[in-house]
Length: 214
Image 1 (cartoon, rainbow, N blue to C red):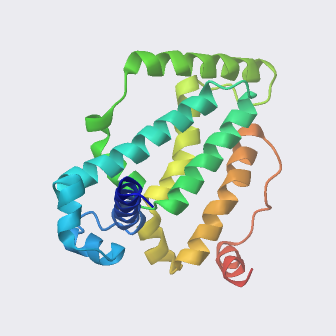
Image 2: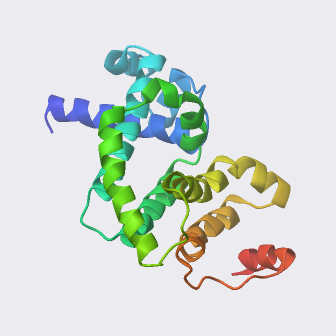
């Protein structure tokens, strides 16, 4: 393997490890020494590739953020039906949360610093909302304002993600148990917004116990 390929492999390994520590484990203040120890390299290599811890943090966050923005755009601008777009959005958001549980926590407090071109956003959402209006006419969903639908959809997806540490503490759930609950969210959310069948209601205590036993 050439030196250039070795350099690229090392750089990518540092970035993937930093992403896991920062956004997968919530160690936003992880030091370059901690990252180097996880990678199994000398700390000076991190400074060689990224100059500083802050620069590394900004680079890996931007990579995740740009990929998230591209994926969201791909879903909203696709030729999929309105319902399929909602399904794809829920799937992607939950899978991202399972990989980086603390990403939404950080994003929620730093969004203003990373806001995208609003004109482009408006153009994308105009197509989505046009499909939404058609769904209302077809009586597939409740007749509420588009912004209310969007708030319902995003909050049903994001709230259990952002509140994960608190919910796990209050409900005494380990990571495996909570991740199983998150994976069940798609069917439940789609059932709520499209009036489709979703798992029958159960007593709260039974629901928690079943998640542990299944």
